[in-house]
Length: 255
Length: 258
Image (cartoon, rainbow over all chains, first blue to last red; front, side, top):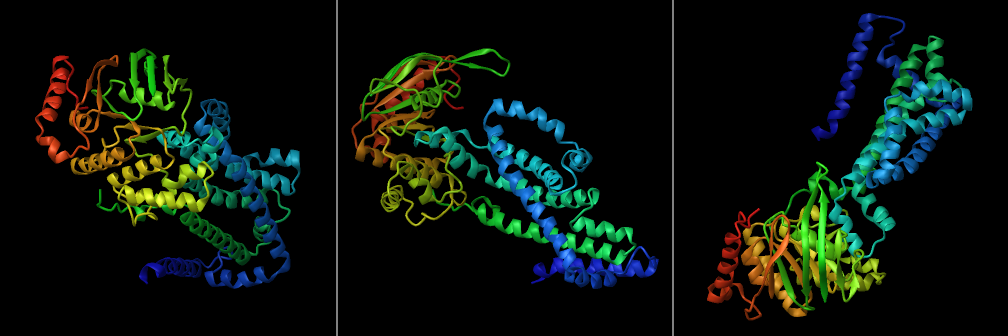
């Protein structure tokens, strides 16, 4: 009971502190928590902003899905083949430390400010953690497990799909979870740089116009979106890799 | 019949030096024989097993199965590893069924055969457990059932009981003998325990370390079916164990234990 209520109490506490701090500071650019919360229904009730949210989520979904579809097989191949790994490793090492949003100007130059550019930034943001974790997961697959499969007659391709993939799945999903959060971050950032549509667009337009209650309301909405997506993903992940969860780690004493 | 014909294996060490792991091994294993490869750790006995399994290619020489040179793994040779190597995302039943489903057997039939095998290795009631929920001994029972399921002609056992405690180990040795004495598959069994080798085998292949060579082959002429309690009191069993241990001592090798 207490454990379930704890996160909500934490949120409530945060809002109370916010409310008190904003009352104490009494600044125009820092609305009270209540003001921000009151602005949420207005935003969500507005058709234009819903269209913007839809566009954001669509780009995020496409960017995330394409990134996972490309990066996961690549990472798995890198983990099992030295040639593939030594080819892609240097490339990734160059790309890894670059903030993907920093590439936005170049991407905009080539692809314009539309969906394609923004989706590409999301794709880049999601790709790296997924590649990295798939790579690590595939590398850690026990050789003897693959041998057991080979002895049963599984071809190299079958071993990849039917042994390496499931064995690395917990690690892959960890990467995807990080990727999901990065998708949200790159989504907002890309819309902040190329303001044309999306949740980031609403947020920064409101900032320009000095509608601070909307700014803070948007932060709450985007934050809540992140929490919900992460929680949903975590549920799916826990279901998929139930076999590897630590609560299952209670060996029976029986020879 | 398995023929190992002048097999040598050279590994590159991390210092990029050649290390001769196996030197000129020739050995014939008759159909239906239980043959143990006994030697100190680092003598290349597991490597020899992997070569027969087709998991490792020998540097020179060849391993043959029924006259055909072994080029890769195949369902005619079923491995059982010390590390169990179970598929952790599959239940006990799923693991045991895996090989049969790979051979495109119908689900119901594969399930029926697998359930029978699971019962045979003493795990009835654990069909839906995941490997993580099982003890080491139970895992190795599953691994054995998983390999027996696809009916390999030869069992390749790589120190299968090496990771188990003494009590569990004895129980599994007994059960393995019971199972083996029923269908008499060819077994190649790698171990560093003299007692285990003598207890289980028809033939014990003694190996020396660095480079791994065959030192001597001892025929174990003890009656079957073997019962552990009877055997331990049998002077012939004791003589085999002592004689083999002496031979290792004389060779100046630092014992059999790893």
